[in-house]
Amino acid sequence: MSTVSRTLASFDEQSVRRFVALNREVVLERLQRLNLSRINTDFDGSVHSTGRFAEGSTVGVNRTKKGARSY
Image (tube, rainbow, N blue to C red; front, side, top):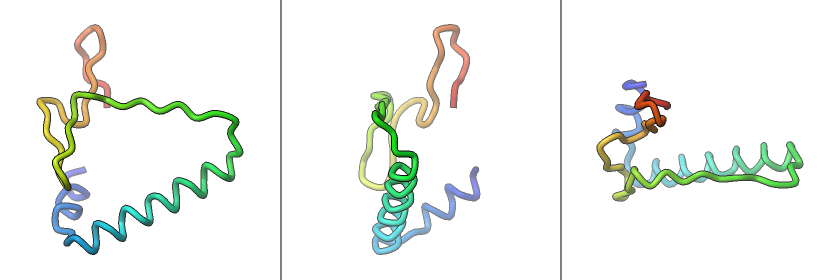
């Protein structure tokens, strides 16, 4: 995973915009193919966006009630 993180960190602004557009296109295309009647989303409040980076004590990690990490 660190290789992916390093690659994304090296993106310039234009590359970030293109990557976001590609992700949007791929996700929307697959959602249309699935023809779902409903989609649920879950927003984790422990990660705060600051532009291209995220901040938080456990960025990308959710804790279960028992304290175990859930990625």
